[in-house]
Structure formats: C-alpha cells, structure tokens
Amino acid sequence: MKIGVQIQPQATTVQAMRDAWKRADDLGVDSLWTWDHFYPLFGDPNAEHFECYTLLAAMAADTTHATVGALVTCYSYRNPQLLADMARTIDHISNGRFVLGIGSGWFERDYTEYGYEFGTAPGRLKILQAGLPVIKERLGKLNPGPVNGKIPLMIGGSGEKVTLRLVAEHADQCNMFGPPDNFKKKNDILNEWCAKVGRNPKDIERTVTVRPEELGNVDEFAAAGADHMIVMLSQPFDMSAVEKFVASTR
Image 1 (tube, rainbow, N blue to C red):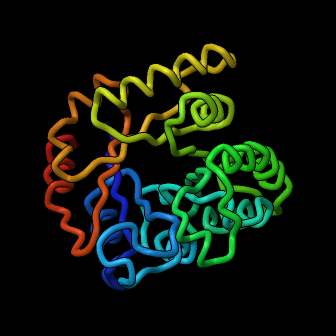
Image 2: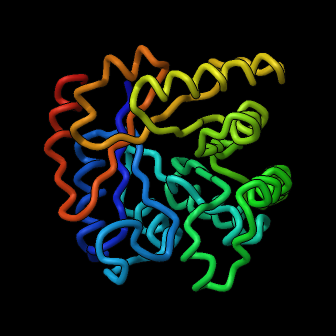
C-alpha cells in the first residue's frame, strides 16, 4: 500500500506548508498533494488560504522523492492549453514527479467570487470530458515535453455514469473516498467500465483519501481494491500517524 499526504492550504502559512511537505518527503511518503480551491472548505470561511498551482511549483522545488499534484485540479478554472503548460512546467521543476489530478469542480463559492460560471454538475462534467483530449494534445506539442514522456493523469470523483467512464477511458489513477464498503462499490463499477471500453483495470492506480485515524483500516481498504491511501492533513499538519504507518510498512 502506498501512502500520500494532502497538505490543505487553509488557516495556515506558506512556511508551515513548506515545512510540512518537506517533512513528509523526508519520511518517504509516495505522494504529496494540495487542493485546488480559493477559500477554506471547513472552519472559518474567511481564514487564510493560498492558491494551488503556485504552491505546487514550490512543492516540486522543495522535495525530491514523492510525486506532487493537486487533489484535484478544478478543470474549469483554467484554459486547458494553459493547464497543460503549467503541468508540464511543474513536471520539469520536479524532475518528472508531477501527477495531473483533475476533476470537474464543485465548490460554488470559488466560482461566484472569482467570476467563473458555475452551471450544473452534468454541465461541468461535459466541459471536463471535452477538455481532456485538448490537454493531452497540448502536452504532446509542448517543447520540451514532459520529463518522462508522459504526465500521469488522475481523475477524482466517483460518479457512476460519467466520471468513472472518463477514468476508464483516460486516467492512470482514480481518487475516491471511503469507507471501505463505499470504495469497493465504486471500484467495482470502475472495473465494469474498464471492461466496457476495453481497458485493463490493472493499468489504473486506485487511490483513496482518508483521515489519519483511517490508516488503521489499511487491510479493509486493500481488500476493497485500494493501492494508495492519501491522508488529509490541516494545520498543524501532525505527521505522527503517517510516520507510524511508514515505519510499519517499509
């Protein structure tokens, strides 16, 4: 089982986040993430908050081992051509460790306060579906291209009719949530989509976002099909559960 950490960029400082992801990288975690929002998702709605992709560039420069990425990028905040170029550039800063995590977006405050059209959930999924080939095409045109020839694509979400089909058609990783029985249900549906579109399900890494205390359920998540547990951490970024997990599995 791989282990990752999401450093949540709310009610904190840039220095605290940099210290946290450096410590996690030194511990030997497999992946490091932040989220792509403009305002806090819980707690004080007016607490400090920082932008995702600027942080990812710093994360890429500050670390040497773990992959880095957004869990997940809101597709509709950025032109797909620009997003591809941003991803490629961070990929070079990280020496090939960038993962392009992407989703259709859901947090209405981000849209209304920054002037984006919120629309509907099905509409945002249609926009994402149209954009994925554009991103791939631009990545193939950039000079230089990605360090390893390709940037892994993660799609976050578990919608059974559209999102998981897009995962089967396009993604190298899929991120979903627990508990284990819910994860298994969604994972089984993803496998069904893989069969329908002719994709080997083993080609898609299955990640699950968890709270620190859920690391104790690693066996249940593994039985449900998870390959990679990503622990959500907010200020003060307590790494004790992650450190214990790493020590027990390495």
